[in-house]
Amino acid sequence: MNLSPFLVAAAPGSSSHQEILRLPAVLSRLLGNLVVKNKKAQFVITQKLLLLQYSFPTEVLQTLLGYLALDITRRSLLTKILRELLETWSSSSAVKHSPAEQQLYISKAILLCLSHLKEEEISTNRQELLTSLMEGMKCHLDSNLPRIRRMGMVVAECVSTRITPEGPALEFQYEEDDEIKELKSLLTQRLEETSDAEPPNTGDSRPSIAALHSSVTPDLDTSEEPEQGVDSELDSDDDLVPYDMSQDKELKKIRAPTYIRDCIAILTGPEDADKYEAAVGVLEALIRRDTATAQELSVELAKVLLHLEEKSYIEGFVGLRQGALVAVTVTDPIRVAQYLTSEFYSLNYSLRQRMDILDVLAVSAQELSRPASPHSKQSPRRPRIQVLPCNSSSPDWQKVVDERIRSKTRRFAKGQSQAEPLCTPNQFAPVAGYFFFPLLRNFDRPLTTFDLLGDDHLVLGRLAHTLAILMYFAVNAVVATAMGKALLEFVWALRFHTDTYVRHGLLSSVSSILLSVPAEHLLEDMTEELLETQAWLADVTEKDPDGDCRNLALQNLLLMENLKKKA
Image (cartoon, rainbow, N blue to C red; front, side, top):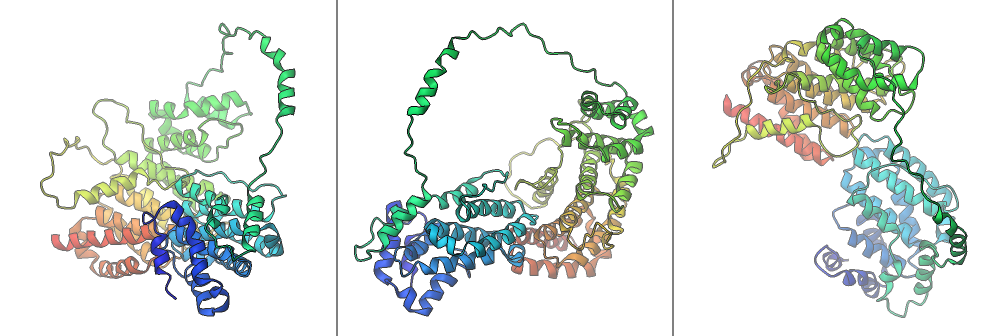
């Protein structure tokens, strides 16, 4: 059975939109009900092209599923396909190990199946579909990858609206990109356009498509006469003259505290929403201005800020809190780093607080390692690491890593480079060990409510990325070689982790080691470890299901080749 002519015709750019819409009818005219009569044809269309590969464009899915929906004898396969697709979509193993592209392909197929099914066809399998929906929603929301979470949210929303149209709508908050808009459009497409070119000998198909369209498209025939009546009754309100508020003045806000001790007293004292907001807003600036007092109270400040809660709405609270924590860490790096790293593995902390600790350590390391601006006494405002990996953009540190990789690549006939910045000592180098080594101390020891090697793989992934950042900013430090050895042992222990986010953090750690540890130390003191790591990276480039992990492993192999050339 050769479907290649239709797959080529359905490829983007190879035919017009109208031709693509006619493809299901053309395929129906050619194959008829072969998919029902022939088991091999049924396997190819319902299994091989939907579940065993994911390289075809959306138009191919529309063609195949539209072909099945055109005749009543083939429609029974649609519900069967939907059950199998949802079973795969709800598998935690598939969510963890399948490439994101394949999960997107399956998500599109699910929504297209739903768009073709009628209400009575869905109601027959409602309970089974609901079970798969709940399991799949949990698996996708547990994923550490933002793209997978967003796809799961969209599919869950769309499936729930079709399975339980009378129930409350399931809604999530997420950013809409082109991928999300395309997914949503698949459920609400105008299905009758797909059957315009259908031959007249399939008499049962036209009523079914029309009925389906009526079930998907809402009835827009509403009367506007009552609304006009209401508007006419309210016309008199338009005659009211608006009150002149141009001379009104805002009520005077509470005066912001001017001393660090006052801020601590407000944040730990009786609740006063106005004073609390003022103290949170001004604390970072006070810490950076009065460094002597900040050093004296550094650990107390870090403790207060780490446990600080948003008692009432404060705009930008998370950023203000993180900024103050970074300021006190930069002011007294050794004592605050010792406190934060010791609290990371302590009891009675939430996962959110533990990730806050990692974020503060990473951003503080970035600020300490940055050369001071010669034009101003105050250091420029540092970029903050995002609280959660909620979008696909890389943090600033990763851009810096990419820039360094680029600088180590030979180029010819390149234009004149920019002026070099002033060379200043790396303030992070003397204190790097206080930030780094305590984080590696107990990662394999589970606590009552915290198990990095168990279910808390989100924090483990964040830990791996943070260690990579700390390693990178310790470049040329005396302790860099010891840090590299310890980090490579950490990577080697977790190299086969099933979570994509964790593996990405481990590969980023390898990049930081290769960029920050002097080449002669790598080749002399870590030769055996590098050979083992090289073999593992080669395996990752071939077998890892995630494209980003494969690309990062390939970058690391190129860095290793550069090291060999230097030897």
